[in-house]
Image: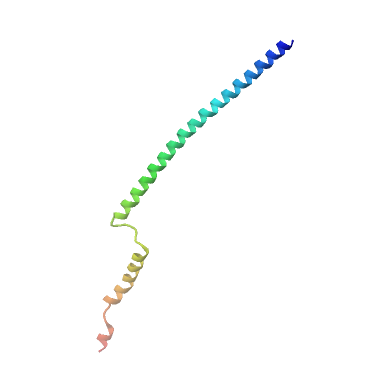
Length: 95
């Protein structure tokens, strides 16, 4: 009877070990899939980052490139001064 119960216990132990190994193998396979997906996403992110940098450089070289703060202020000042410069001088007319 002792041999029979030991054999049953051994079989149960082996079955449990087999299940744990199958679970481990399945988890490792999922990890590999996730690592591959992560590598793909990181490559895509690097590609998109490079494309964004290229587009920003391209946009900066265009004539319609966004103006800097100083350039915007200069344009506003020019817009305010031009009408004053081109307006007829009323003081000369009065003299």
